[in-house]
Length: 184
Image (cartoon, rainbow, N blue to C red; front, side, top):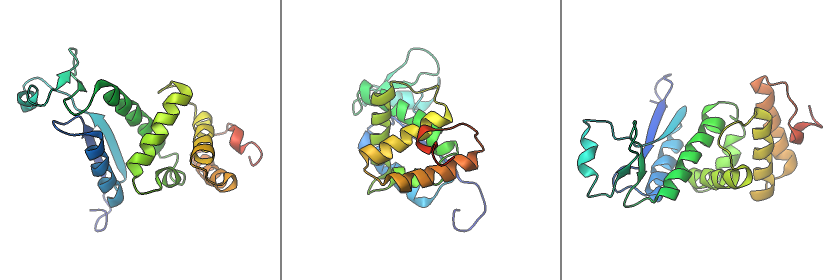
């Protein structure tokens, strides 16, 4: 579809399937990312009433939220802390990748042998740095991404700044991220 059509390719990946680990999910993410999907939506498994997934609950240690939509909280292969970390990662993925605001900068962030591992490291760093998953102004995201790419990943400040500038200008935003103040 990517190579032979003009279709917008939107793919959903669901974390928390019976027997799945964070590592096996990451391998699937990396394969899908390499295919060039236009958008990858990340979600956590939900046990909707009447669906056959319930028959796997005991065998795979599936524990679901007691309230609808009955999101999986942990499995025999994934503890609750990892599941919460993935939920944060999915939120950050929406802010950076699916927003379309970081088209040039995202490849810098995902560079390396595993795009998923690179984004997971960013997600963990972002959570430790801010303790937030919401209320990120675009300018704050630009500065945080700059900090991560330059201080944690060790990329060249000027190269990262130039790439972020392209993305920021393309977004049409009118603010002034600190890392771009001298070039805006």
